[in-house]
Image (cartoon, rainbow, N blue to C red; front, side, top):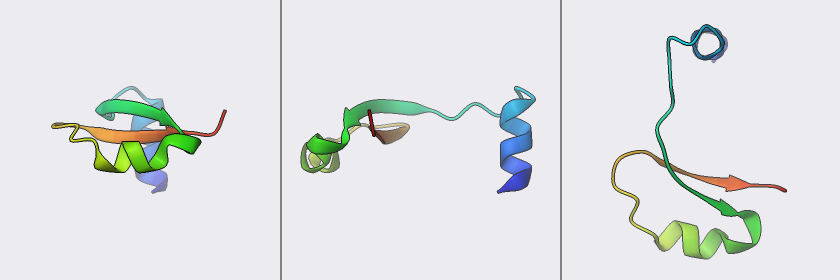
Length: 44
């Protein structure tokens, strides 16, 4: 994990995020087909 964090900070690794949802919409996020990339839940 430390190595991945270092690569991200250095700009050598860019995670692919397909969609973001607030935590209260976790069920919707889980059922959404996002294709390439990850679905991220936000805590704000």
